[in-house]
Image 1 (cartoon, rainbow, N blue to C red):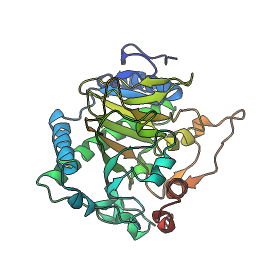
Image 2: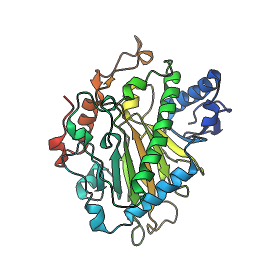
Image 3: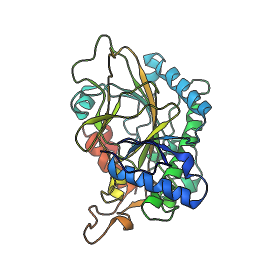
Length: 347
């Protein structure tokens, strides 16, 4: 199944198309054409790759070097930055190889190391902090003592923040809203960024073994920087077939999450995806990626977008703050872990 897209915007068509964001620059008619294409894609697969996105190659290269340097540290140095169980935003180093998370990931489990930062973990002026949030939300990010590491991560974070805001503006146009409709909902946004390492294994992977189990993302949109040679990211299409996400040099992969599907009253799709071993992959090679999880302010009210509600399609979800939404998601996902005992929405 292929989305219907504007050929002036789409470089490669398909269930996961490649979109040229250069077409979204300039006159409002060009932005509207790009927005309509994105709206069609989000209603079909919710996954696309973008080129001409404006993130400098030098910034992504520095981030990739920093990511490899961190995961190459001795285990004890990484474990010194383990996620604090009382941190509601799970900043620091973690592993998804423990049995409880393996079960959570479903068939094939998960094999993954992560390092997570959050925007709220950096010093911010009062207007950019949660208005009524728990102070734990602003717990400091946990940085390794690697020269240039923090700078590389924050430089890429800032570029992704700009790109996410641009895409959210196009999303607004696609939903027949003013281009700035989402802006105030992200004034104190709680965006996380996760660096991932899928470690190599001795010998061939076990049958059905996945690098990352089947899942959907939770937030509004995810911007993914992945190894250009890695074809292991797959999405589940409407015919229940697994489709490879294109690996295009210089591109970033974007997908919408459960919150965007909820916000649009089911008009847009939050698609199941996974990371697999590919071809003759024996599991020896490490794979790396960095995911920017764009999330609104904790006190932003999430209620069905007016243009997505009709008499025939009434609102499916009751209004809730993003903080309440995220807390409910994390409680369900991490019920087996101590962190669930400490999760609470801002008051």
